[in-house]
Length: 208
Image (tube, rainbow, N blue to C red; front, side, top):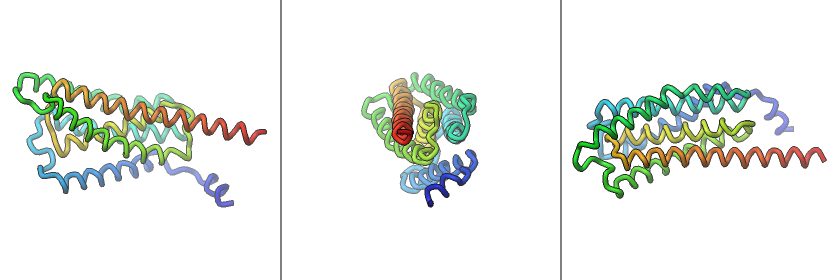
């Protein structure tokens, strides 16, 4: 009876659910700022500020798209974060180009680039897990909704990194950003595929 009652309840609006997830991102950001030895955005240049803002906007818009596609079929929602995504990637590439002429720029050494990768994966994967948990009961029919979830988590992690450690990306560091984002999207899509197969198996068994 309780399960039937819960299933009959209309889901919260996608924008409201996305706001709830982004509130968790902001809480994590507040914790990182409180525990960081550096002031937020200390020493950030124009490219880093644009990257941080565009990443945050991409995160919230991609989350809205993921939740929207969980309640209705519409690949067009994936275009919602397209402009902010382009601005985010563009700012990272511009920062990479600007830092190429700066000796000793952060991320040039493999150990520094790996630190960025570890931070990005360590932040994006839990955020992706939270977003998947919030999508779990809706089981979006299309993998693109889960791809949007991965993008939201990856963008949030990049924005948080810029918040506590803004720096122009070296070419190697840029590669770490892209690798972390690809990993988050791929894992979310794989989780979505598993969820759809599990749902299809449950439907088949119940029809027997």
